[in-house]
Image (cartoon, rainbow, N blue to C red; front, side, top):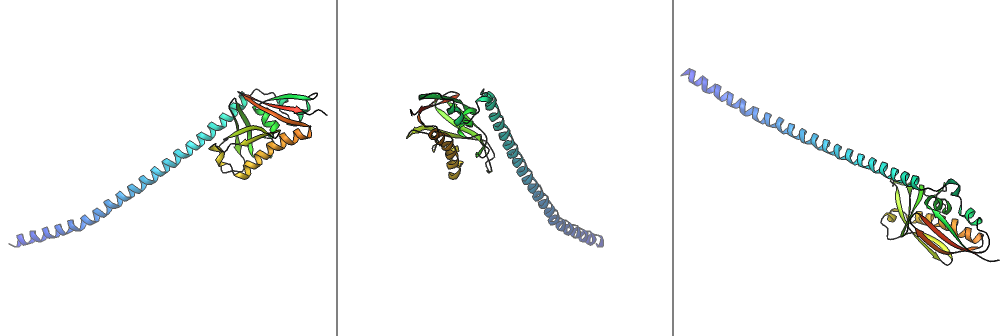
Amino acid sequence: MAMGLRNQKNKKIDGLSRREKKPEESFYRDLDAKNSSFLGFWVLTASILLLIFIALVWLAVYFKRDINSSNLEDNTASENLVSFSERLSGIKGDGHAVLIFRGEEFAKAIGALDDNFLLAGANFEIKKDSVYLKGRLKDSFIFWPVSLKILPEVKDQKFYFTLALDSLENIIIFSQDKEKIESTFDKNLNETLKAKGMIAEEIKTADGYIELHVIKEIK
C-alpha cells in the first residue's frame, strides 16, 4: 500500500516536472524561430542591396564603355577640333558657305568641350532625324551618363540648339542648367556669327555629321 502511494506521488512529481519543462522548451523554440526569422530577413536584405550595388556598378561601366566606344568610332582628326570662330575665319569671300561638323568637332565648335561646360566628356550623336548631346553631369547627384535630345533650328537668322521638352531624360535637367547649356551654344555660335558679319541660313543633319549653312554679308 505504501509502495503504491509512493509511486503515485512520484508520478505526480514527474508530471509536474514535465509540465514545468514544456513552457520553458516552448519559449526557447519560439526564441530560436524568431532569431532564425530575424537572421533570414537581414540575409535577404543584404543580398538585395548587394544585387542593387552590382547592377549600378554594371550600368556605370556599361555607359562609360558606350561613351568611350562612340568617341573611338568618331574619326574626326585633332586638327579639326577648333572653335567656331576659327572655322568661320576659313571662309573666303562673300556669300553662301557650308560648314560640316562631325560629333566631336561640333562639340568643340559649340563650346561643349570647354572646361566650364556642365557636362564632362561631352559629345554629339548626330543622325538624320535626331541630335543628342551625351556626357556626364558635373556636380550632380546623377552619376550615370545622360543623353539629352537637342532640337536644332534657324530662327531670326540665328542658330538655335535647345533641349527638347518632350524628352524624358531632359526632365532631369534643372531649368537653370538647361539655360546655361543653351546660353553656351548661343554665345559660341550667334555672337561669333555677328562678330564675323554673318547670319545663319539653314541647318541640315545626316548620319554622322551636321551642316551649318551661313551667309557672309557683302560689305
